[in-house]
Amino acid sequence: SLDEDSYYPTNSINKLTALIEAKSLACKRKVYDLKLFDWQNIAKQIYQKKDSMTTLIHKRVELLRSFLQEQGLDAFIFPSTDPHQGEYIPDHWKTRTWISGFDGSAGTAVVTLRDAALWTDSRYFLAAGEQLKDTPFSLMKERIEGTPSITEWLAQVLPAGSRVGIDPTVNAYGSFLAWKEELKANQMEMVLA
Image 1: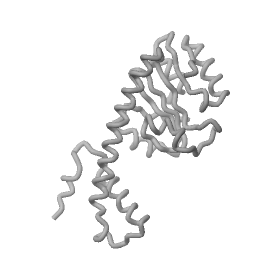
Image 2 (image 1 turned 90 degrees about the horizontal axis):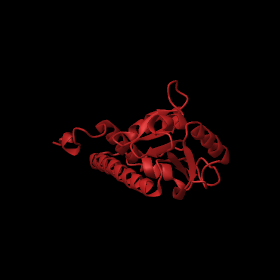
Image 3 (image 1 turned 90 degrees about the vertical axis):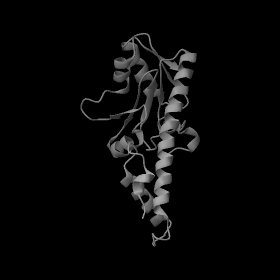
C-alpha cells in the first residue's frame, strides 16, 4: 500500500492541489487509465518543483537586494509588460514572473531591501496566493478597499530620500510620470535603471 504522506513534508503545499494537477496532466495527455499513469509520482514531482521554485525565488530576491544596494537603489518595480506594452509577452520579458514566481498575465512586483509585494487583479487572487505562498512576497489585491497603491506602499515601507528603480524599456511613459510625481510627493526619487 502507498503511504501518500511520505511524498509530502507536513509544511508543504496542499497535497490535494498537487494530486489534482497530476490528474489534470494525465487528462491532457489523454491517459484515462490512471493505473497506467503514475499520477502519484507526478504529484511528487509537482510538489518538488514548487518547493524548489520557492527556494529559487528566495535566492533571486536575495541576489536582487544585493544588486540594489550596489546600485544605490532602495526598491525596484517589475511590471508584467514588454516594450510593446503587451499583456501576453515572450518569456524573455517575464521579469515579474522570474522574480516572484507568479505567472498570471497581469501584475506588478515590487522588491525593497526588506519587503516585497505583488499587485494583481481579482482574476488572479487565488492563483497568486498559492504561487506566492512561502515566498518573500505579500499579495496586494488591486481595487480592494484598504489595498495601498504601489507608491502608497513604498511610502509606508521606505524612508524619505529613497531611490526606486524601473526599467524604462518596459514601463509605459504615463505610468513612469505618475509614479515619479507620487514618489516625489513622498520625497522619493524614481530612477531609470
